[in-house]
Length: 135
Length: 375
Image 1 (cartoon, each protein chain N blue to C red):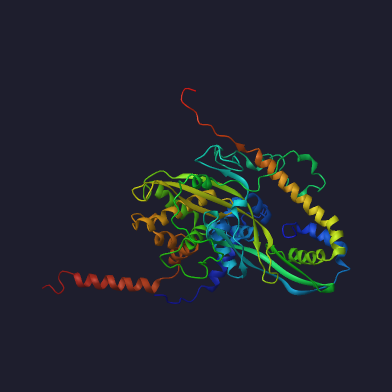
Image 2 (image 1 turned 180 degrees about the vertical axis):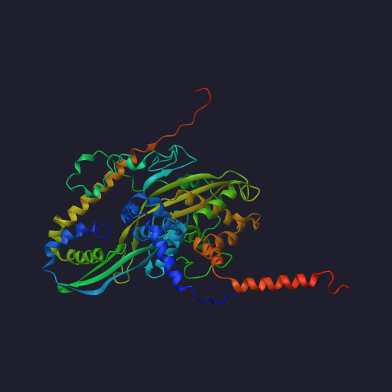
């Protein structure tokens, strides 16, 4: 969910904790690639389809909690926030707060996106008929 | 023979300055932004990502802008960019059976389970240029839903969600025992990778699919067309299923040891069906070809499926009568970066090479002059 989220949402969600949390980098944000694999005939043997740009990083916050993120694209800030939030979500106190705020926002955004897409797509469902001559 | 040529440094710099000026065009016209390219030239971006072999909308949009819309040049730029990036690993193979389809049609069964979904397509448009596109009104609801406040969810509650999994047309044929599988490789986890090893013939199916997936659309389309016109196919192929949609990318980072969701990518998947008579095989049936391409790129995915089939056919019959049946012919020439590089290098100085040709011809002519050596 953090990987799919808009950076603005993550920023807003993390903002209340930003001052309280100090962190150290275990792996600084770096952009690289992931080879995307597909499967022949969709379920057969894997093959290399092409790569995707990703950015990953790893942080350590209080209590030795580690947060990891790998996100699509080359936005270092997205990866940083996702890793920090990943760390916070592993701590019960923060988890409860974030579940009520950020995670709820992300969930409803995703639902909206899905619904909007479902509406657009269902409107284009079509039925084809074969006709006999003379009918 | 290559011989270094010196000089022209200043002219080259000036030429680069000039091309930058030409790219910008008339400065009274507004500059186009990367967002505009990514949003309004989406299919172009998809093509550049597919042939550039890198799923990165921003990089593809920048490449299209920098190449003045020259797609092959943009593909080259993306390929060059990908060589600067470190590879972290391989994704878990994407599950296209779980694709969130925005488009899905079959040309062989009209009542496919899950329905025929047209989605966004130019197939049924009139293909007439609309006058005055600068002032055409925006279509309704053009605002991306992301910008809507998150509490407005009630409005479309009655819409049933998109199915998580559409039944595959290929399974219908399989269930009826009509399908012939010839290249069954056990579904393992690691695939060969042609960016890490040279293409050697005979080539495995997974390398063939990789080469076609990043191959030039024009070449792949043209050679697939040659099949349809009779240069390799003696009967009509059929579109089993064509699907466009989003799949989740998952990866297992070694640091974590479990797999995580990285993002969602848009793909086009295609299965083509050909009839095969009992003269060649034990029983008459159908054979299929497979295509999978980054982005929405149906022409390419369909052509890829036709070629996947025709290149496999050689294994069955051992015959190669036509170019589109010859793996070496197709796979060695389908890459636009390689082919445009080799053709375009002819623009570079070949003065010494050509000099040797002149010397050769003059010598030959001297040898054949009638009054010389033939008194």
